[in-house]
Image (cartoon, rainbow, N blue to C red):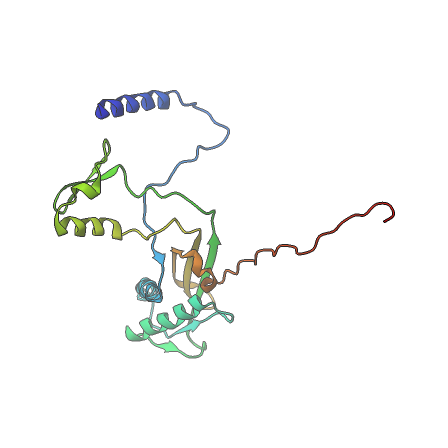
Length: 231
């Protein structure tokens, strides 16, 4: 019965799609194909993305004659920018690159971190259909009917599979805060290497990335009364 209902619904949607207008005043809003974006939740994660950025930058540097590099840390660096500069220096030195303490005669490595705030409560469609267990450690995405998972999970292997299936996703709602990290290597004439990547960050950690939220207005403790006539 459920399968027939699903088929009828699909047929109805097909007919509706066929009746869509050929012309609209503006483009229709559509979702992008599903992708994943890492969420930074610990200082260790900062080291991971620093190593990743360093590998991409070094791959570009190898296309040019070797030169020392100088890490140009922002003057008023946020905790994240300071940690990124420190960890990037460590990664470059450990990989055998010369990192200068002064900019003279060196390629300049600059870091730009743009923190952006989107609307809260953005949806996430993590699965297509519902999870269903077929046996110990064997899972299926069922689009028709969703059995009660707690009643059919069998053995420790099933729970391990369930944990693995869900552990890839960060807990909680979609963060409203994201950062765009760009690392550029240049001399006075041109860019030699450049890397840009985007990450979610926990909304409770916004201060670490330079976002200072305004304090909520305190309630007024005074009231004004208008008196008319003689007392």
